[in-house]
Image (spheres, rainbow, N blue to C red):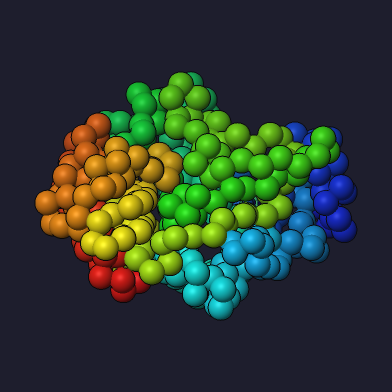
Length: 328
Ligand SMILES: Cc1cc2nc3c(=O)[nH]c(=O)nc-3n(C[C@H](O)[C@H](O)[C@H](O)COP(=O)(O)OP(=O)(O)OC[C@H]3O[C@@H](n4cnc5c(N)ncnc54)[C@H](O)[C@@H]3O)c2cc1C
């Protein structure tokens, strides 16, 4: 690990000013991802700006929705009564990830900013366009069982690893970002970028910009939503495929829907074509199958992950079936 400066920020202004003065800075929240990456020399910041003393660890109710501070621990989000009542899919998604010990340390902001688990990205002896732009992508022809079938490019097929962000995308979450220039809001759906020619650029956060909170608007999906995660073992494992499925049903007809995929794409993958197929149709196996087929219509599988196409389809159907029953 390379030597680095360490400062503890007492307020937002100190944090963003310190980080924008030195572009090779990183904010330190729970440290459950960043410290690992530093030990592996994948991340080599000059300076760590510890943000744990900032006042962003509360959850409050706003206009029927919620404002969740970026430093709220993942376990505190799960245990929050308002989250459990109005956004149960968020609690379920977070609970499906990592371990209790990690969730007790991990923060909402850190979860949003977590890096891919692609083994080539995490091994500095291997080329990786995301870590070392222009060096190549061994996953394209190598071990790609865990990799993306949606949103990839000929430069990168690394999967976005978060469970929480799949649910946040289905809930139309908006991120509140703060920099030395002030605050701005970005819907989470527009926050992440697909790799294209520049896999090193993963999101629209500017250098030195801090995530301060996540806004969740009032949800119509509390009654009928489900997060389904399929993985190699039933706990402490990243997704092979996951689905956040939300339905709003009036007199047996679907009036609104969200389908977002995890584990199969380079970012939390919203399936708008599938949602459009569902809206206006009665709840039925035929509609769910049609929506699932549309979700993977553009899939580009690789040698070892062709199974993900069928897995994603079946997972969507299963998640929709459970959501329709009203059992989260
Ligand atoms: C063994 C293991 C298993 C895991 N399994 C899963 C899983 O199954 N599903 C899943 O979803 N996740 C999983 N995770 C990932 C885990 O959720 C993340 O490690 C955690 O959420 C990161 O949060 P943190 O606060 O510790 O972030 P840190 O490690 O402190 O920071 C991570 C990154 O976010 C940046 N950052 C942190 N806060 C902010 C902010 N407010 N604004 C801007 N940038 C910020 C940091 O600079 C850093 O680059 C696993 C992790 C481990 C180690």
